[in-house]
Length: 93
Image 1: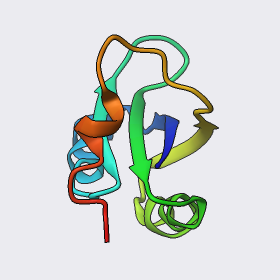
Image 2: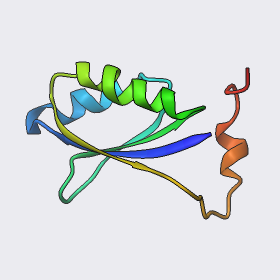
Image 3: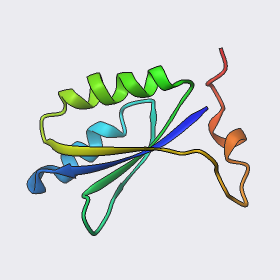
Image 4: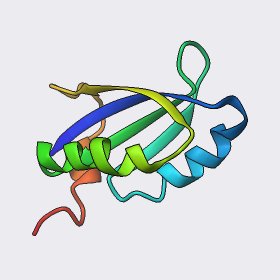
């Protein structure tokens, strides 16, 4: 499984609207509105890098109010929870 974090700048009056659209994508497990340099953070979990590429270059590009994104690829998860088993449901096959 490939996990990535997408940091997004959104038109200020459209943050809630964009967040609602983002959670509709099956690749996006969580969306957070945040303080600081970015407006939204999306947690993405996909089977392979090509799925992430499709999400970023095709699907997100079609959301009009996203101004800019920065995508970070996670190398290692450090957690007290078994994240792999929590998020791998339905991704096999």
